[in-house]
Length: 359
Ligand code: PHE
Image 1 (cartoon, rainbow, N blue to C red):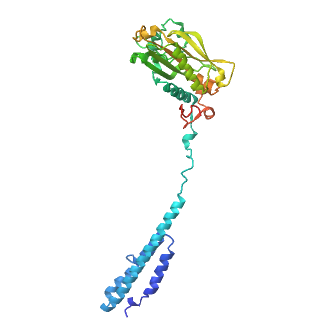
Image 2 (tube, helix red, strand yellow; image 1 turned 120 degrees about the vertical axis):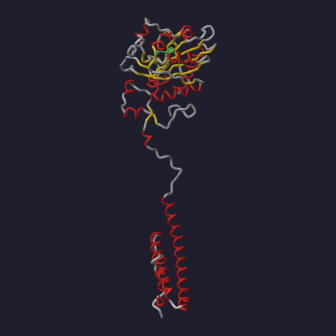
């Protein structure tokens, strides 16, 4: 008998089957496959030895080796399927996630919205609900838009009162200014559009002033409504609705005091009863307003005999300080992170009338 046929096929099959069953994972199983059926594997070696055999020997031994090859191949497949299923089950168990858990707050949750931004968003939301759109103008304004067209001629005392920051004069002698109020946006809007007009204009304004209640840069929101019949009653109603929505109270007491602005006639300053912010007994001034002066209407090319309307200007920082009990307006611009963490608002709580402004 030839050496090859002496091989203990049964023993080999048992060895291989044991190795297959014992393979702890797919990698180990593949090693077993290579040992048995790979190019230099034990079964492949036996197949190769067939060529050197006598024909009848080759036939019976060939059949035996082929049978072995097939059974080992099947055993490998069975074990492979088992190990694959086990690996998947283990992964599924490991990667399981409870999708009913609340969202894990990422780094964005550590940020805070500044009270001025918050109040800016709140008031925009309220006026948008009343049908106002938002208008804008530049911080650097012409002398004309900031003063002249608003009926504040060069010798007018209001110019001194406003402590204006002037830019360097141009070659023609004219000077740009850092706008001292948002009222020039009235002029820009009326020059660009025909009535009816219903806009608010929130933005930065500048005056040379610095103490507990004044910073050189602060924020105002201008309001302007122009058509053929808007009157003082509308102005009162509009401001009252705003105050109730903004301070989140059912009733608010308001006091309209006669005042003077060159660009409105009549002009008023408005106080609210401080019970709205939990301090009964006091009056707090929050804005200036009035009916747009006929001269201002004429300055932008509107016919004052046909058109009329109201305007108001309110300090955003001021109403932010009142609503959120901020003690010193200089803190608003000190960039103190501890202050912001205390007084700021959560990033994902966007103020809406339906969902609540400040909660
Ligand atoms: N512009 C005025 C101010 O800054 C406020 C104001 C605006 C008053 C509109 C009346 C009408 O003080």
